[in-house]
Length: 458
Image 1 (cartoon, helix red, strand yellow):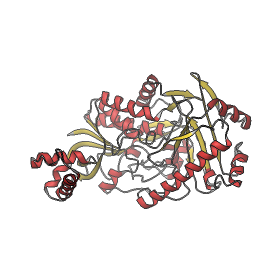
Image 2 (tube, rainbow, N blue to C red):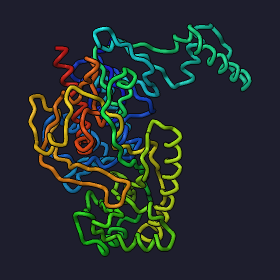
Image 3 (cartoon, rainbow, N blue to C red):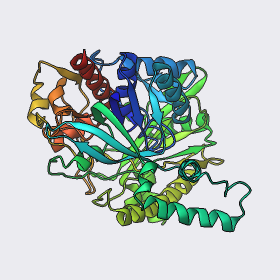
Image 4 (cartoon, rainbow, N blue to C red):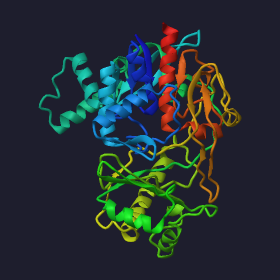
C-alpha cells in the first residue's frame, strides 16, 4: 500500500514524487522509459522556458537548479537559470529522487485500474517491459533451470512458453498489483485517466517537434558570424559564461515577422538545400556544460498528428529525421563555425505541445488567464505567454500576458475522487493550456499536487 503512486516520470511527475516522498509519504514512481526527465531528457526540450519569478511551489525546481549547478550542468543565461545539460539531468534526477525516498520502477506501465463504488482508485495493475524479469518469475514458478546455458533454440522455446504463460490464468502472477490512497497522472497524455474512463476536453492540436543536437560547432566563429548578420539582441543574444560562449537565435517562415536570417533561408530554399517546409521554424540554444553543442528546437512537423496513432507517428518521425539531415547540412554550408559540426543526438520522443486533457473540477480558461484571476488554492503563479504553434504560415500566436494563477481544482479529476493530474493534461481550454504547458509550470503543478495530498492525509 502506497500513499501516492505517480505515473509518469517527466517534469511534473518527478516534482510530484520528490515532494511527496520528502514530506514523508510512501511514494512509488512509475516510468515507462529507462530514465526520468521526460520532455527535457527524452525530448531534448531545453532550456526550461522562464515563466516568471513567483515563489509559489518552486522548492523542487530550486533544488534541481542547485544540484545541476553542483554537477557543472546548469547556467544562468539572460535571466533564466533553467539552461540544463539533458544527459547529466538523468543522473541528477536519479540521485535526487532516490535520496528523497522515492521508489522508482523503470520500464513499467499501468495496464489496469480498479475503481471502487465510491469512485476512488483502489489499486493499479503494473506490467514490466523487462522480458528477463518475466523469465525469472517463470523460473520461480516452474522451478526450471532451462535457460542456464541455453542455446538459441532453447531460448526461443522459453519465449513461446512465456507467451502462453502470459495468456493463462497463472500468467497473472507476471503482473504486479499495488494499492494506493492517491494517484497522480503525470503521463502528459492522461493515460491513467483514459483507463479509468474519465471525461476529456475536446481537443485542438498544435504541431509537434523532433529536436536534435549538433556538436563540434566552433562557437567563437559562429558567434562572430551571428553578430555580423543579426544585431537584434532580443532574437540573438550572445554572452560569455565561465569561459564559454552561450547564445540563441531563431527564424520562422512567417511573413508578418522580421528575421535577420530570412535571406539565408531563402537562398538555401532557392538552391534546393532546404524545402520551404524545413524552414517553417528554426531555433537553437547552446547547452550547459557542452561547449560546441547547439540544441535545435526543430523541425516542426506540419500536420495534425494524433500521437496515439502509431502509423501516423511513425511516418512523422521518418519525415522529421529527413528534415534534420537537411537542416544539419544547411548549417554546415551556410553558417560560419559549422564546418566540423555533426549531429550528436536526436530526441527519443516527439516534443508534444498539447494532447489529451482531463475534465477537472474547474476548467481554467483563457479569460481566467488574461484577467489574472486569483484563487483560494493557487498551484502556481506565472506570466509565460499564450504560445500557439500553427502549421499554417502566419498562423502562430505568441501573446504576452500579465501574471496569472492556476487553481488546484484544475488538477483534480471530476470523475475519480483520488485521481490528480499534473502537466499538460490539466483541465484547461486550448489557449490557456498553451501558456501553462511549459516545464517551469509543470514542475510547480507536480509539487503543488503532492503538497495538497500531504495535507489531505495529515
